[in-house]
Length: 264
Image (cartoon, rainbow, N blue to C red; front, side):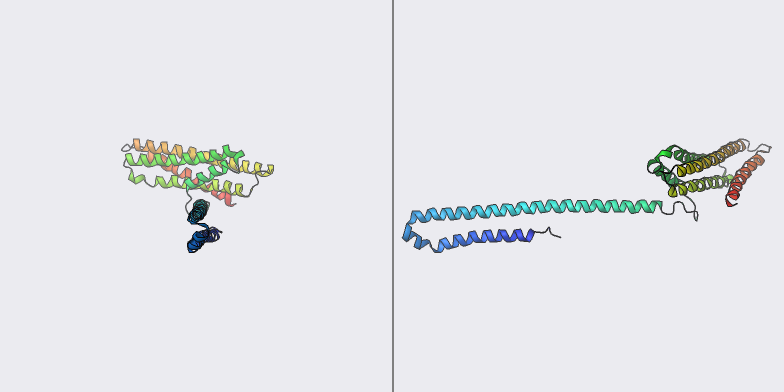
């Protein structure tokens, strides 16, 4: 799309150059009459004046037109850059929306990393006043991730493939923590950060979520130590496997009990 006015400017250039050319042509046609009437010197002076003015007009108008083209190019470049930036922002907005799409859905496995990103966003934006308790929940999920990495490393270096099901236990704990955080995030979405009663409600939910998370993390830590003790005593005749099963049952029972409370 051309910038409005370009064709009009081109017409002005054609008219100006055309007028200059007509003036020169008319002077050429009347050359003999002018020489006879006024002499050769007058004709040459008149010719130089006409040619000079014509050339000056042509150059000036052409220069103005070229400057106009340059300005138009700059305008088009600026417009294209602005459109490109708008498109980039639009794509980023779409990507951001897709990134958070169904993050809190319980119809599939929840992504701990995305939950942590959401907590960071809430803490940095609308709910900055509650940034500390929000980041505490994020730190709990970070710690849970570290526990899972430790377990995976422990099983790998000990070649304990038979205990791979223990990773499922920690995975269930992580999902439980994510679902608890999800509840808080849903409250944050509907609460008003400017309403004191809403802020108090959210604070209560954050505190409850943090307390429950700490309880689960303590049990996970104890479970990891029990697993390490079991691996250290492999080959010995003791009840370390029995203790490991007790820890596993305790963790699962704790999660199931809390889930039953939520449904009652």
